[in-house]
Length: 640
Image (cartoon, rainbow, N blue to C red; front, side, top):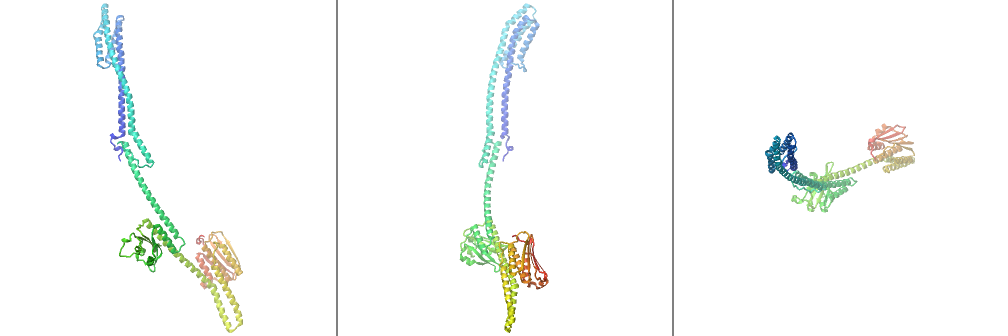
């Protein structure tokens, strides 16, 4: 873009203003100077009229002085007359005093000078020099006789000067009037030029800026000159073009960003919706069905499948499907990983088919026969391992964008994690059931199996006594059989009660009090329980294990301790401690260690403590009772 430095000097507004100012100033100075000159000439002419008029008076005075006054005074008067006449001839710029330079005035001045020099001055000197009275009177008479003609010449000179001055006065007035009109014209011209050069462009520029501030980006300024305002208008138009282009581009960018944000919002909402669904407690088939239904709605698919990989047989099984015929499902409910497109996606990754008609016509594609136009297949991943694939079928050409592809890949990973989690949950449940069954078996072995073994021996002894018809021995064995059956019944009842135990509203304290109370009612052994501390509640899964340990400890007291009192102490601070102490027979820890796993009750409590990651200790002395202690450290406690 051109700048003011690039403009020729003749096109610059500053140069025009400077030239206009200088021309106006020069004309003004010339007019003022001319009027001053006329005034100066009028002043000098007026002084000349005065001096010429004084010559008339001096000529008559000279006659009187020469007749009645001394010659010395007459000579002085004559000298003053010559001086005045000479001033008229030469002029005096200081006074000012000068005659106009017109030809008639100069000729008349020469007439006056010649008449004075050749006649009047000679007669005056003759009068002054003549000693004879008669001759002097005669000369004075001649001077007096010639004086009217001389004065008349002076009058003519004065009249010519007055005429000339009257003309100059008229011309001065004309010049002053012209100067007034010229000043008015100059002012109007200056105002017009100011409006044309400055006010107009500034007003148009201001109007353009106001329109632009009101978002009228189509405004453009007319370029009417080549000066600085023309350059400024050109720059304004270029700026407006740039702003309009940027604004248009900005609108397009805003639309693009808005569309992109909308797509991202849709993507995030879909991701949250599907992820929220997958996080729910659903079976694997229900997970896959809900997943496929939501994905098909989001992408606009006309059909779809979710296939789970069987690594042992290297095959894919259709778990759920939508929009497919039963015939197609029947044919492809199980395919190898190297068959068709769905199988190939397991090993190759994402597969897109925009148009089945462009595929190999020699190969049979069941999707194409079903009437689908395009298909997209994605892997289902869990811990970076492929566990299946899901496909989306379209009856029209469908281009999957990069954002949608990224979304579907992420959702495929989420589905894989959810499937894997459900599998782990199932295994965990299976493992928990297995552990509980193992503990149940151990409990049965510790109680029922030993009791039944005792009863078996008693039955054998009873049969032997019957064979020998030993009534006394039979009477001894019968009470033992009854006692063994009753004990086995009580053991079975206690086991059923223990394994049916459930916490109500996670209130471990009340459940423990109930356990101690039941123990006291069933055995008659005095039992007390004490709770100390105000720590946070223990997590429900840990509370249940603690309750089982307490039940098992009291069961061992009932079976083996022959105690009269049992004290239970629960300390719930940052750490959790459970102490069960009885005053029974006690036992030797060395003998228990020799038996190993034979003492099932202690072993069960030890296993449950290990599940809690708690420290489990037993202190017992024969004849001095037994104390069982469980210590759950703060870092092992779960949040309730």
